[in-house]
Length: 230
Image (cartoon, rainbow, N blue to C red):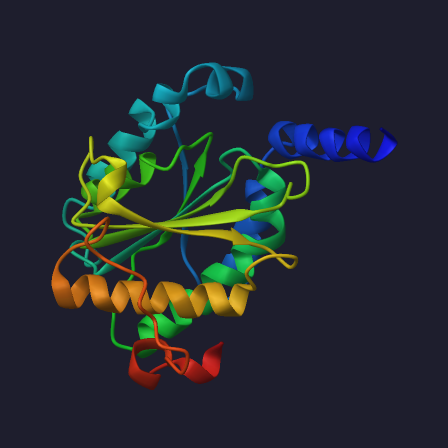
């Protein structure tokens, strides 16, 4: 009973812990990654939990910021947009997202892909990434997001990718890599799997139910480009 109470408390804490966006931004910018501060239409954690629909779209301020900043930007039309949001576990993002983002972007850039600034979205759901990428006019979007905590996994990071994203895109058009955390799928293996899926998505022009995870055991990210960075 005490073990259950402890696990339940950790799960609640994962959902209710505030997103330390400033710390993550500092970590990413120190590594040379430009970041953008954005927010969903939800104005508080309570509203985010009660109104999932608001977490799926950007606030008016964030939409205007992106529309203005990327209207004539040299990053417009980048290959990959990377979004980070706490989702339902800020702890998962605090513990795993920084290292994952830095490793993946390094691999992608080494392979010749152009990336947008990292969008840090407060109170975001998975679908908010589609609007972010659409406004940035990116070809593919990846979102790192805290997963709904289980009793044994309060710090699990989810990774979703969508080719040709647009607002209103539905879940069958996405691929998901789940349970990225020290006790689950390692960050290194998660990045390797993401690189494979991104490579296949660009080769085939799709993601989702028609893109299977057939990654060979000896796969090197993007055919070896950037593999040493993992």
